[in-house]
Length: 453
Image 1: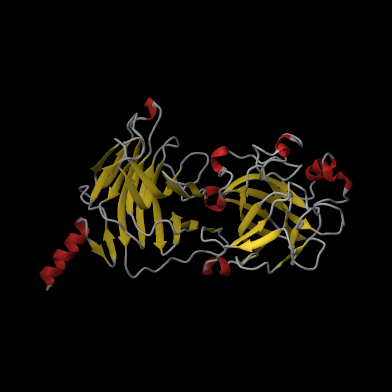
Image 2: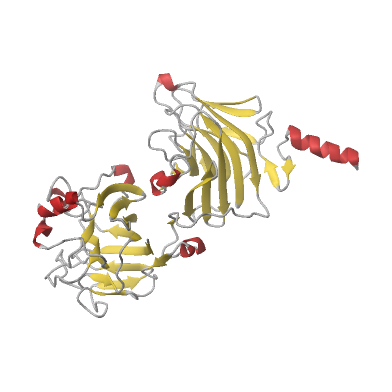
């Protein structure tokens, strides 16, 4: 009995691909790359002093050291060190390989825990390598953006349980993604491709790689962290506990009425297949069904919504709508602009692009990169955050594109040179409705959710 126990202890201490500690399994034995294989690029991986060392090679694309085994539900922990802000790395989760991809060089694709030591600081965010681009940019959780420590080992924790994927970096909770695309796949370590000869030889270090696949006990996630939920019109129990509520249940128009009306419009809007859609009417503003507004009013809030534009479409999501103006056409309020920037002429009007998609309409231009804009006909996610101190932020697909102080002198100066100058105290109401605009073009909405702050 004692001899057997000593052997087991020795095995656990010296490693072995399947060495156990509790219900943890070591994926790296500390001496060899048994159980792993290199895919896609030509970067070098080797074991030095109990550590997997990945080294960049000039001319290589992204290179991955991946497990030979696939995993579904799991908790993964490991330590990683990256020594230079010009480097980049990541850990693949439930990922896959297409040998014909990347022009025959092979393509690894799937969700990745990002390691980003650059000034952007998106470490711990979730990137969909080789497929959908960013799913959870680090900008969605700015409080976690300082968690990575360059030049020292950082502890990573990843929980993939059911449809939920959560990440921690150095015990700091970072990202929460709800997604149904991948049920299982391999785990991988990345050496990022480089485009400059002088970056050849940069190293990334991985050690203490272990996994649990049974008896999984999720670590508590503090309330209030934004969730990217890719299951339409649903809220997780975590979102509900954080105070999120659906403004559209996916089946009815409950909670919405026509602007200046007591009921939902009889025409011009339809609810079908989990979508709330305003129908086209030759681009005539509020001439068909008209705008719709929430029955409730909001002061400080976090509002998230998916939208899909048709070619040339124009619409908007307005907030702090009081309906006190009784104007003709669309009701008045601060507007998150929804627009086909390429085909609709409004994109070239206003001042310096302040009527383009996700801008604060006619006041502040959204600063956005084309790579983060999903094409017309695909779903995009907008987000408006109004803090109790009247600081306001607009996001598009997880990227913050503008911010301002509602009621500040700078804000009032912008109003004074805008189309809104005729409205007294425009945009400064203490509370108001949320509005979806009928601008005469077909636009679809879903996953409209809000949390009061």
